[in-house]
Length: 486
Image 1: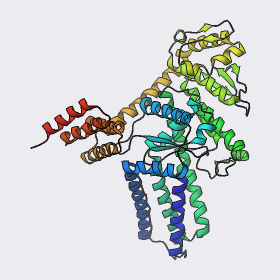
Image 2 (image 1 turned 90 degrees about the vertical axis):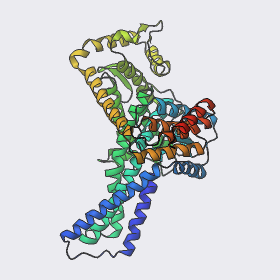
Image 3 (image 1 turned 180 degrees about the vertical axis):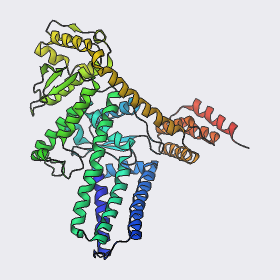
Image 4 (image 1 turned 135 degrees about the vertical axis):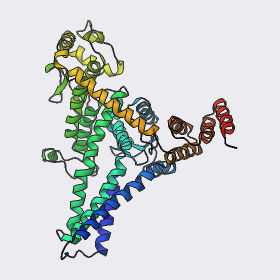
């Protein structure tokens, strides 16, 4: 999606070059500079407004899905679809995030493209390729990290802002060419594309990785899922894919900066996500050499390959470390872990059995259960002096305060915004989607400036009717008619 937007901008610039002769300006006066600055600013705001409006239109959202499926086909594997539905429903329901007042609830679909990718459209439609699910080998936690990443693009409205910045940057560079004569039109397109990739899309990719990490961990997934997904993705893009659009040259990892791709090199992203895992554990858990899991710097175990086709030991290490990180994050004392030795030299502990399944077999295989118990006990002895847990909680409190402020902004929506939310809710009912219609009406009833409460009850009644809840539909309809002005 981002590449298509940049291509469109590129065509616009080249087209402008055919109409505007690249002559060297004799001089640049103050009024000319001011006019150019206003032109760049105007291009930015015009593009931003257009894409934000598109992103707040239910019909455009449905059109996004229709075009995606028309182009790529709908996935036919029921297991793939069920996995994505399970992960997305959990992220949407339990993840810690707030949609902006002019954003739609997420919708998603699995298409039949074999390419390893997913994308979030400006309409908050998340497109998941069949190739991504297969490339991640159906890993629930790795998929959650990728989809949380895409959700963050939607939550932060990255597509709209990146498109607007791209349009403004092209506009500004075209003026630079015309007025100062610093480059020819052939060089302009390459420079603009590079500048946009570096200054616009790459920062949002890193931001989406971080946001996705917090969404997926708050929804209860393994904190190691993000780094594990990058390890798998790096291998796939380098050694498996036969599609030049996906290929990642292993030599590029040594470049001083990311290349022209709009996704940073996977090794850099893997390292950053591993750092987030460590921070989530209050600094106790690290992975060295992408294989050895350590507690407070002391090696506990080294993950080994368990996949016949490739060395997946980095994935195993990150997921095992993620189970430890989850426990360190959730438990304030060593006793809370419920640690106990098992006969095979392993250990049992409290927590999510699915997440712990990435750790406990490795502990038993290495017969390091006693060492794990000792290391965990030692870790909590010095926790007060180090202040690590206190810093972790302080960071989380600051993040919670940000969410509260975002909630307050939604609740303070003005009358015009509330009218649009009602309109979108009714549109979801038109499409038979009562669930998302009710999501939007929850925003309306939570807002402070609803000037048409009777209409709100009637629209919510329709959403209940779509879901087959006759009692609530009748109750809201009666309330709406009764409250309607005469």
